[in-house]
Length: 403
Image 1 (cartoon, rainbow, N blue to C red):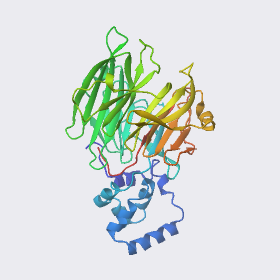
Image 2: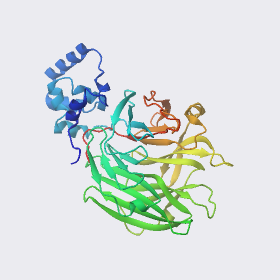
Image 3: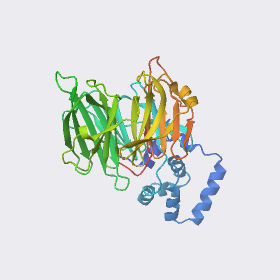
Image 4: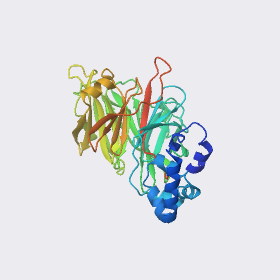
């Protein structure tokens, strides 16, 4: 497998260089660490030690691997990785980078509230399409759309995928990925949208699905929509592919956005037109995400008389085909976030939602389980050019998952 390496070996090679895991070594007093290691080494058998270590956050696991030779071997064993796959999910991290040509940025760990420098594998620039699920992230070239790969950003393992036929000729594309937590089998879906020649109101929509078992692409649906086109926003939740479509006029719908739900497990005849789900209000933009196999949307709320002007940011959960508003950004955060930015980046996993302004490295976090808003620690990334933008994505840090 291309780029395959054990995470411990990768760490050993890079620990004295600047990089993601250097900060993991900031442990406090050496004497305390050694005393803990000795006592546990005496008391705990290997299998129990590995099970305990599997419950640690990712940063602590890397620290544990540097405590002693025994701990190093424990966190690199197959049994430890098996234990790791059966414990509670790691808190999702958020990777932020700038619009420069170098896809190097910083990942925020919400457990330790720290930023770590990470160099991503197999991505060209920050404007590539990005989708994530569990511990894997999928990248697709935004310009030529001829490069497609899936990777684990923590271990740096990756695999390049063949592109589906005709992808580079589409006007709009939306990328989504779904990983099975138990089997690690994954599916990648791409929604292509191409304007019908000489007809602005008709758009050819096609759905292409890649499965890691048979390693092939299958075109599962092709349909022409009237007055709606696809975009770049999609996500897979519980076997359903959801993607946003955008009004092209011709009928003046109440809202400029709509949601389409497509059942990926049922390849019988499905009509996208009959799968429309209305959006709860007029939006300036919408961001879709999978939180514990539930579809969540973060949207910029447009003014009734000026739908292109943002007046707030809301979060909705889709129950069946009905939207339930679960939170609205308080005004004090909305002001600090950038109340004049009608579009923004947002992604999430588990019970955390990250919202980021394109114009600054400010990162706001909403905890859905505690209904709490808070700012992250200040990101080290800096603005080097007047028109430089900031963007990012959320991913779950895992060690045991590889493409």
